[in-house]
Length: 452
Image (cartoon, rainbow, N blue to C red; front, side, top):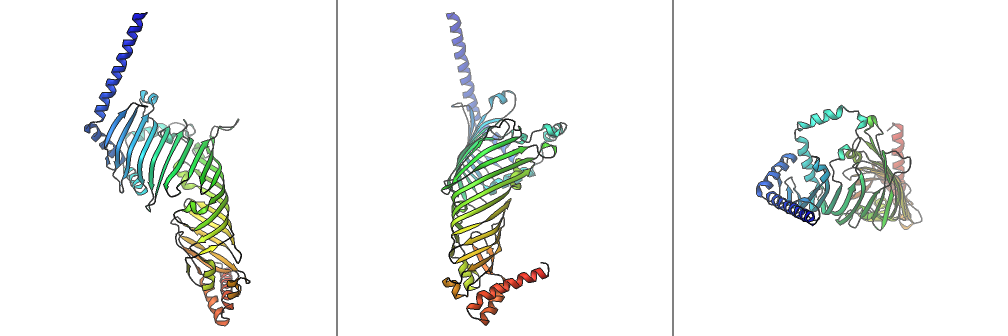
């Protein structure tokens, strides 16, 4: 028995020494310039953009992994990663399949323009010869048998982001750290995110997948979402259904969110078109064949109220008083309420109602994907206020909204300007507001008459 244990001990020691020698040899081979240059060539050919690597290393502690140091994708501008660590799924690797268990990204800078350049280069690449064969094989199977999440099988089961900076097309930077875990079906099991620098600094978010209720279909999934931002919180449920469309490939995303006591300016920083405490109820809906298309197809409907609101960059009372273009200044409001609808990056504000002691306003405003403003609001100034008395109690003065979110502006409509000029000539001071209102009314009636 003692002899058997002795032989087992020697066999185990030999195995450990062999493994150590193998790891040492692998580490030395992977660390050579020859191997690094080969990886650079393969990565450059795969992406269609030159790739430069500082070094490659193999580590065995705490878990076996391959680490890429000083990685630069030479797009314009370049994408840089100080360290990219990949840990494979060993069970899949032993079966001849490369699946990533954990992906760790440290101190990376990801410019949006650089990412777009890489995606454009990938689109221009000719398809590999193996791809048509794979597609033909998949086409031979019934469409219903292919789950909607097959596209996500290549994603790592766990992703860790450590000080990753995203640079928008306009050059604004946001640094974040977070972690996400995927379930075997490729959908998020849990995710956490914290913004440590730049836009929305201090925001934290948690996403948790909820267990399926008894009798719930296996294609229906729900997540609980909580976002802490601007001194308040956004909470709600997100749900996704798979296989609801033709051939069982459509994805349907739906959700309901409640916003409470969030400072509006924290959501729009560094721009500050509006400040105040936001309360809102939001429903969202998207239908698409792929997860990427869901974002583009997303539509939201929100009813909101902002308490103690301040419009920055616009002085509505001054715009009425001067009967002309108004830029700069601010408008204090006790409440601001309305409805916001979004589709993709386009925003439509409707049923806007604002009020303060001497001023009230209502109207509709659209925000384009480029953040340009367009619309019209009607401003009322009470006759018993100082300014209202000075212009004869302006009621329903139509103002055209223009400019951008960063630099909004309001002007009287052309018809209102003409009416104001006539009113001022007939009754200086008192006739200005009445004339502007009359000009707006005449313009409305002419539109009705000609069906425009």
